[in-house]
Length: 434
Image (cartoon, rainbow, N blue to C red; front, side, top):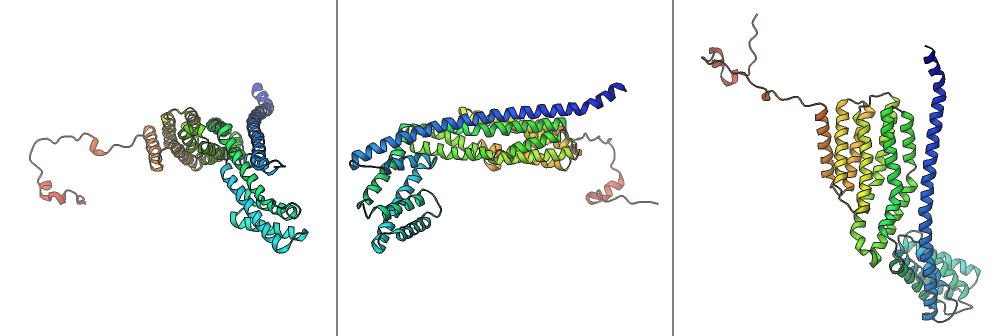
């Protein structure tokens, strides 16, 4: 009795110490992840800065050689703008830049010829140039900015320095083309490396939290499942960076001849990563169902935590195979194993939230199979068959009567009553006698 009371007295302190340890380990993990993200950002910053500096120097040199001596400000500015402000969409933004400059010159020259020069004329020129650019582009961007900036220059400088139109167009053209040249030929990034570094934090946090949900189900810890859900909800910035990296890597394999040999590998990797965002949504739903099932004290079959953990293993294997270019059969096998475990857990007995969790698991498993290149119908069929096999393993189906041995009748004459009823009489109910 004394030891039991002592345990009761110490248990709140033990729980507080455990919570403190968990919070400390979580802070360390988040600090390490933040440090790795800053390191990745530092490398990206160095690459973009080097590209922008080289492009500015080349654009200034070419403008001076091709367009004559003078203050060629717009060429290096356009080169820097092409690289620094349009990561992943540089070719399209270069076209927008040139169209914007052309619109600004046309609107500026036309209105200056009609209205003259002055402060209110400058305001009207910029207003109409921006409105025209928005009507052409349908949204803001490089086209609108260049149209407005060029209109300002034409309205203010053209009266005192005529002949700005043609140099402005050539400067923009030289700057944009030099920016593309640097990105495509001189300093092209490795698209697989860019994509892998953007995928890494998403996959790491996703798989860690799936493992955390599995542990929470095993220990029946609803708070741990809720913490995993909160962490999964914080993946939006990483997913945004992943989408940006997809655009940038796709641009490189499109316009950089030195990276064309990586096209097939990139597209395979990109197709797989596009399913990650939906998989994160399913993982959040799994964590939410797990927390609710534990809060309502629902039964948790032993196979259910294993199925959740197997989903995380499959995600890790998918990333490893995409990064190395290996075969995806191991990923598909892990998904099938997880589906069998989910079917077994359903047969072992679950309630409302447990059944919903198994449904989310099967949907996530099908999504992961689609990430390996399976068609939707094939992925759904594979998961359904594997889950059915798991259900049958845990609870074998009742065998039909026809599979049982039928005792043989003794040889002899057929009973008169049975013979008289014929085929139809065999299926009639026997006549009840008093």
